[in-house]
Image (cartoon, rainbow, N blue to C red):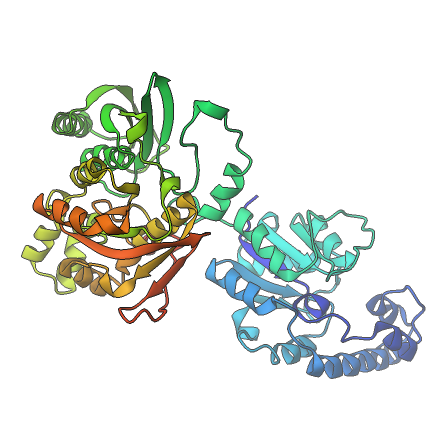
Length: 540
């Protein structure tokens, strides 16, 4: 069911409909109403008649091609398909010359942007025969079943279904005619196809994208008072009332990106989320998955690391599961941390208010900097980073550290905090978007104030990584009353942790507005996948 390639009909699909006047063409050819033009031409008794008819058709098509324009949203959709790294093709009953001429009227993509273009000149049997779809599949190196066939006519649907592809019928805001083969999807406009691709194309490594997760969460049934903080985008914990005024806070998260010090990451990132709720982390359960062939000593090393981290964080390692399986190619630790907090001290992101200040502790991408230094030391040396610099970045695990528990406890004890959110996968950019969604308020961020450590900036330059989209455990976002921000920053700094005022809460809604120190709007990047995941993928 995965979409690896998208095939488009051309005239009336990628181009605006109505350019070709088929009634006029039939009249010029003497083709009976209702009979397909190509089939009529091929049925003519003599070669001379067929040649003359094809010449007339070619002339009409070329004239129409010179006037054709991209359909609404066509070029944006094609850009998105290329961005998703899917194969892209055209199959048409038009001549190749007419297709190439019409593509000259596109502004952002030409014939070279398509992996395959198949016209009536290439396929001996045009649509509705599946021949052209199967030919396109072979040329693109994909199966027909992995193709999404898009067209505005019944022949497009029939060709696609008979080849085994999934099909999209584009109505161009009209009514679809009856088909002998029903399409898998019906859309009125091309831009709607993006949603189909989002659901069926292979996902990149990283968290499930928020728009897709949001579709599921919107349908999730929540059992009333049994949950004080329910599942939601930007909500990293669940809060459950258990007895009197005591609340149980639950968190589960896997560690998949780091192979070195994986136990440390697993404990700390889960403790971090529990701490952002104002709760005290108390219990840990883990599921440990190791590739086939792993030595027992390697597994025991992770277990000992987990136990040591539990002691440091006053946690009880109270159970879990360990398995060696061919389902993974590197170690994975899935941890769950539970903690407790009194109801009146529970910090709920929905309590943020317009005018609140947003503080950020330490600097962005501490975790990502550490991971990159641990996973790519040789590459960084080759690019000019010194061994001392690499070792310092490896040490970011504990200094400045990926734990935010201390500053979270200081913030929670102030009584002035309305929301907290730790920066994890997707970096500060994604964390602010999640905070905005969970808190139901827009956010203004002062882009020039965002602290980026020198080592992080250097690794970013060397590896082509953007720090704002780099996984960032170790940095905590704190929303507090405007009048309390200075004293809270001072309290955190007295504990030896840097803190910076980087933004403010705006009116109700969602979204990020970035400004410079002069409060002029500046671009703000959004990241589909974390920069570490992108680097791992490109390094394969």
